[in-house]
Amino acid sequence: MTYQPPYTITPTILQRVAEIVELITRWSVSTDHALSPQLRRNNRIRTIQASLAIENNTLSIEQVTAVLDGKQVLGLPREIQEVKNAFGAYEQLPRWQPHSLADLLTAHGLLMAGLVDEAGSFRRGGVGIYNDQGALVHMAPPAERVSGQVADLLAWLASAPVHPLIASCVFHYEFEFIHPFGDGNGRMGRLWQTLLLSQWQPMLAYLPVESVVRIRQTAYYQALAEADKLADSTPFIEFMLHALQDTMTEALMKPSEKTSEKTSEKIVAALGQNNLLTIAELAKQIGVTSRSIERNLQKLQEKGRLRRVGPAKGGHWEVLK
Image 1 (cartoon, helix red, strand yellow):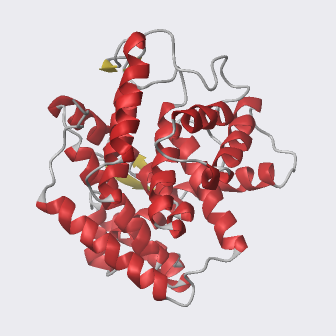
Image 2 (cartoon, one colour):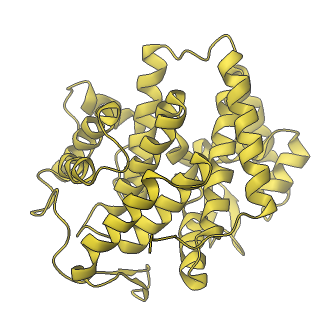
């Protein structure tokens, strides 16, 4: 029997797909849909920096840019190698087929070259995923089942009876569940979802959805955990489609809407009055999108203007002078 990953097409998923398709249509007819080489490179850098940051790479956008420009960067050799590998892997996207096992292994070999001994090969032992407190949150299937499970997943992917947007999210979750490699599974899952999306709509090859996932990293892991608990990828599909939609919305913004000192100052002022405000509440109060609030909050933290104290839910903001 052909393998069928468990998931449910919810009204939320259908709505997200429709809205993303509409955004792509708007983007395709806009005057700047054909990204300039510089913008493509900038978006690719944002993608790489964010995807690696999720895996605890500490290099900033500026440092990643310098590495790719061949400049000397003060950073850990492993982190610099991760950047070079990731850029090389993303540059090879047009050459790969999503359902090809050989291409999948080649991609992992590029992504993890010089970082692990088994680059380009499936793991040979068991692996568990632990949270910051050291508690086991996911035990991956035994190593002897990996090759068969990956083959089943790729076979499903080759003729998935579902919209590519949904199929890409299902694959991403199933790949993380199997955890086929000893290391690099997270960045491989995100890379392969980008490959899937780019084969459907080439412009999506340069959509830096990873930058949104990085900001929502806690929710990303929560969605994976919820899908594990249900043995169904539906929660993860909904999360990733939301991230894709917000990234597309940002792509259609005018430059003046993306970064606003005025918006940043309004955020600081609002949090100075009430440091418990949520992103949604800030967006409503200031009159901008939630994505704009997220982006400005990240910039303010990088500049040392704000600090988050406690978790995403139940914590608060501290305004720094």
